[in-house]
Image (cartoon, rainbow, N blue to C red):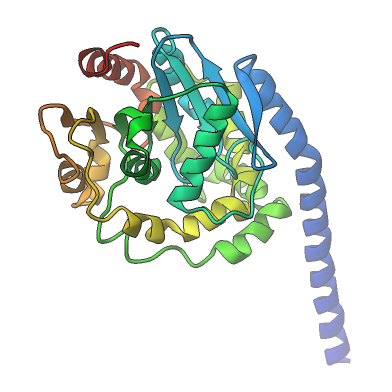
Length: 332
């Protein structure tokens, strides 16, 4: 009798778990296309899709200046166009600004192509070509995109007019050691709405501290509306997909590929680093200074702020970047 009761309890618990997963997955599958449509409407007419290798890549194009600035997002940024929005609007006052959502991020499709620096750069180049925008471009990478920008400058130097990094990554011995080993199962959790559930829980409990960290990155900035913040966080519900997780898994490989690289001596480069990153990564500032080959036109500056420093300091960064470009990258 005892074993029979235990068996019924076990079956009951399994049934509860199955029902919970089915409910979570149903809500996720129903809500995701509605969230994506809301993001499209929020971005507005600047948003469009381009075909790259048979997949849709999401981009936003603003401004009409003679310089073309390419905003390149950090690793697993859930909604790059919303994230870069305030900075892009300021830069677009004097430039053409393209925010690219690489495959696996934001509203872009996924892809089976391995997430190497070469592949991500080539796909971005193809997207710019589909938009009819020819180089040379001003690359403005955040975080891991610094590795991709370095690959771009060393393999296609004629296509790059300047690099303005936003706490962007360089080779460090710590980052080159290895990558997370959890991506293989996280995609399944995300596919059935598990991340959506965790984000909802995090909003009220700070269980993951993900929502709190995002809100901290905003500082006192008032340019992100409550709708923008909410949709940005909802985008986490689908960002941990197989494509993005492959990029995470290949992080160390891409870091090692940047070992020893420096900017071409004729390329203007400005690295704007967040003081908070220097506090947690001793090699962060030295790694950026070691990439300099010509101090006359290549600089490193440090700004107080979060790793996503452009969330709270869009105006200051836009002004700093514009002054640098006006001095070293004449308008065509």
